[in-house]
Length: 417
Ligand code: EPU
Image (cartoon, rainbow, N blue to C red; front, side):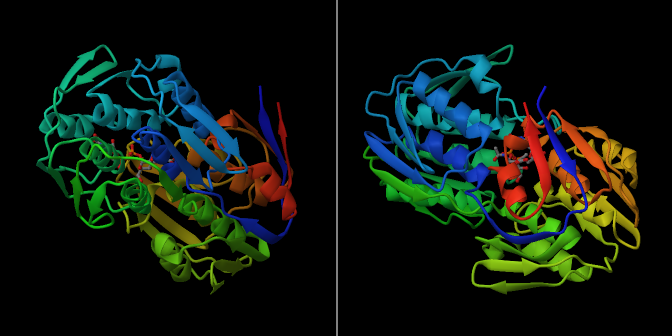
């Protein structure tokens, strides 16, 4: 079984370059199947989710070429085939083929998508949206068969600003007749990244990044080119790392508007950093104050940084509180953090208390989900002794070249097959 092994307490200095955003890239690849011929996506991160998406695209008869972070997709021979369950369950983002194939062929058949086990994660908002555009949805066990003779643009209201549903509906609406208006849309940067790709390939999209998005459907979709935005969650994770054990650690590739809530919280708890262009420089904070954090949709504090910042708060002088509003099962990392010496108490399903500061000690731990795994590698990097993270492949689903990046700044870390 593969493991990440860390010998902790090595001061980290030098530069970490942020890769393309997982949650943008995993939507941009399925979006590329909308194109009649070719499209190219630059700055794609080297992560496991992308490998599985490429397998799905090849299954659908796309020709996919990977060259140094640039992925070219030739979808001129795209075939509409059911997506096998063993591929679709590998990640959450396989659901973006629902919107894309529905727009292109008026039919899609696939199993319920997988992804981190951090809550129930239903896709009812996606399904209701497809139905409002005129699709018929049949669900047999966990198999979805979605068909539409014709998709027709409509005004749709989301009960919750879901990232996945916003992107999926933007994809489906690209192939609909007329204009679709999504009200109470998600505003995360990933939405803007996908919208810019759609616009580049000929779809008229207005308002991405706001609560109201309008999409004019068209049949002339081709030649898309896009750069994946830098990963705001990878960036936030490494900034937190800098506050824990950095020495003038430079994080290159930041877009400060994408990480505004994290930066404000860090300032509140006494962490200093400097930003010069797209480089943030940070050193270990010797006097971390406790904080109260509530996760929210963008531009609020991101749920995906909740578990990483928990590790930072184990070092704060006093009691911190976290309220997780997005997922009902995102404190599983705290079991192993406590085994390493932290004191955290899950008060209710979505409330966590952290008592600091605590010295952490390396031991065997298990990464139960991607960001939970991140909180453990952060803990391992500041702990005394050796930390062995089992089930570490879940971390490789989202952090591009993590071992190489951390080694280059002085960490003692290795990946063992
Ligand atoms: N929700 C519903 N019904 C739906 C859709 C969502 O009830 O039809 C609920 C979810 O159960 C959850 C909340 O709404 O409680 C947020 O879900 P959302 O749809 O916004 O998230 P997602 O599309 O499933 C993406 C990222 C997540 C990230 C969230 C929030 C991808 C592949 N995943 O998930 O990333 O946490 O947005 O920003 O883009 C991660 O990277 O570790 C990760 C989990």
